[in-house]
Image 1 (cartoon, rainbow, N blue to C red):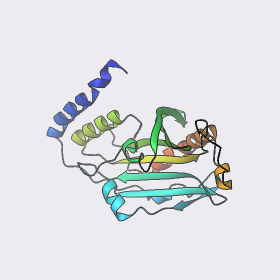
Image 2: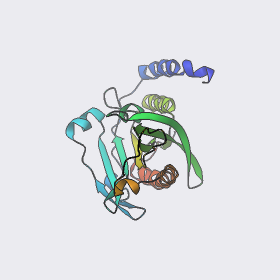
Image 3: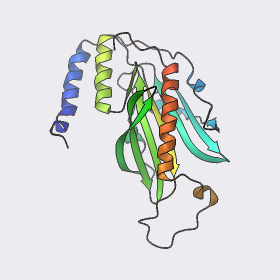
Length: 234
């Protein structure tokens, strides 16, 4: 681990205290277009919108969202979630998927960053693998807003505090892709169970990575289209 990693959170917190001392009133930034206008179908798969219940929405604190599951032959292939915050403050801010996704027996197995190229520009997004027994799920996520696409959560916090102090703008979106992956029985003890047909159709890890990268390339400009225009001095 780099030597600076131990003191980086404290440095961000200290800098945040300095910035917040002079923080101006936060502007509420409406979307430029509805979140539901992002692709209704991707890769010849129709999307089906899912409603998040009121309690989950209250806890998450987003101003607006779209949660869309894409299916092929009645099989859920992947899902897209975009949660938008028209401004952020204590109690109304983006929750890291690293804290929200594990649960219900799912545990984090690995985390890394993945580069995706959109219109000739490279962007880093988070790649997160979850496991529950032999079950696997691949997650790609990133933060998008105020003209930026960011994976590093310390940088996200720093930019948020700085922009809050300088321009009064804190709007941002969390974009998340989840792809169920074929079970991994490599460490399974005992006879391999008979798999139902829908499980047999699930993607391998390389296929899931390929799909996630292609979906990210499509989603980044679509999300940018619906977000408020970036501040002129960012």
